[in-house]
Image (tube, rainbow, N blue to C red):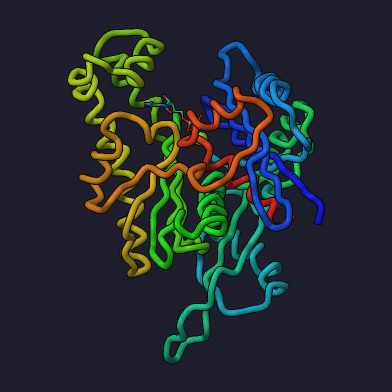
Length: 343
Ligand SMILES: Nc1ncnc2c1ncn2[C@@H]1O[C@H](COP(=O)(O)OP(=O)(O)OP(=O)(O)O)[C@@H](O)[C@H]1O
Ligand SMILES: [Mg+2]
């Protein structure tokens, strides 16, 4: 089969990441990459267009994602039924679980697994229901088109991290903890996404609105300095490390506490144990993040850089440098582009 490609576009609140994945004879490679910190005076469409214009892409086809309060993800149990029956039943089922009218959303459903039979009960299966406000999706598609791209799929951030995990496991089994439950946590600027996975199976996702911005805010307020200065100090504390650590310890504990709540909830609900945490996202680099999380969840925590396992063949040294430097920030873009597998 000829080589084909797709761009995974992760539009974060601070950084836009675009990663082109290509497949040739069953081999996956990253064939272009760019990342841009959104300039304050730019519209999102302009920032996306600038990033896309700065690299040489083989395609304009793009998979992007949405997140936030107009996106609803629910894991529920339903009686075992066919995919077609599920498609019909999901719409009615969804009405019970989302705070907006079903007619206002686009939705999808997926059977995850049949549950072990319980005596005296009808056989049940676990189902994933996803819905997002139509107007929200339409605006997102318009944004991509304005930037000159051709949208193929609109995904959800938390699923994308899971898909990155699945893809790297296919490319290199060493990339994942085979047969074990792990929690992937992408700690960005404004939010944190969690996906609890075992191999290719996602059991639970959650998103909460805390991240690196809160860390920068804490430094800025406590030291009485401008956010820009606080951001620079956060990234390179140098000799100010003890002062920075003191400013941010409370915020880090808060973020890690919320990650722990999700893991606890999952473990109680499903009677399963998460064995390890993988952290990604720009804020996984924050001083003290890994240690604080390890202390809070009482499980091993590793930084996860999927690019350790995926080959890259890029158009320029500049792109290669960005990919190497930004490895912790690319999981979502890679997961979005991994939809190429089913293309
Ligand atoms: N070395 C570092 N130390 C601390 N924080 C860092 C470092 N590098 C990046 N960050 C933080 O990572 C964040 C950006 O990461 P990322 O690109 O994952 O966020 P985003 O995708 O734009 O945001 P979100 O997903 O929340 O919308 C910023 O808050 C930035 O301050
Ligand atoms: Mg992000």
